Image (cartoon, rainbow, N blue to C red; front, top):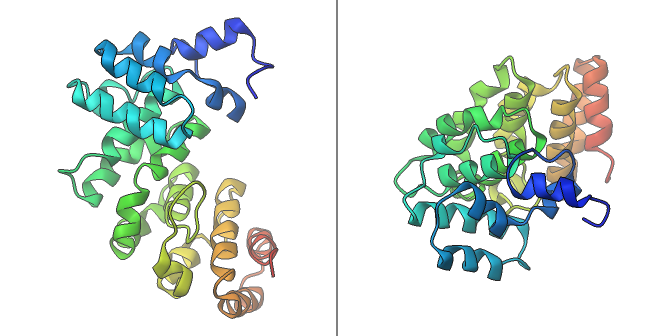
Length: 244
């Protein structure tokens, strides 16, 4: 996947001089080289990352945060404004992996990263909190409900994407798979969202739920078709029902 990326471009990505522009570049970053360039870590830590080169990118994100924390460089503020989207992603995992912080505290700390201009950082922001969200989905829902009213489409989308029943590259939320009605207020708040970025997330959330509760999804979309006539909601319904 990285074959089409020039050596000069790889050097920029691996030294943290520039952010990636697409998924292939995200996946091509050499975490060991990047860690060695941007942080002061012992050689044993760098070798640990080299040894993990064949592991999935999510596992390496967690490992990078762990190595930074162990080297007393675990303050997310140190990394969340870095030019590299990968490094900003490490900040997400430093927040998510803080065993001393509650989920509400983590969400507040994650807010600027959830609103990051880079698509990759915004994904790491919710993925880094997924373990906490799976452990306490109703608390997460309560905390994220107000985000559905944020001016930023990034934050509105985060509120939905972070709570997806099945998610992407992430553990499932059993409660929402079996009882999607718990998220009624969140879904209603976003049912006519004007931004396609948010509409896609809402449609995907509903599509996830429909895999285990198809009749609930059909009933919801039938009611929305009757009560809501916005183009946004029509698009969401089509996306939601695509697997039925």
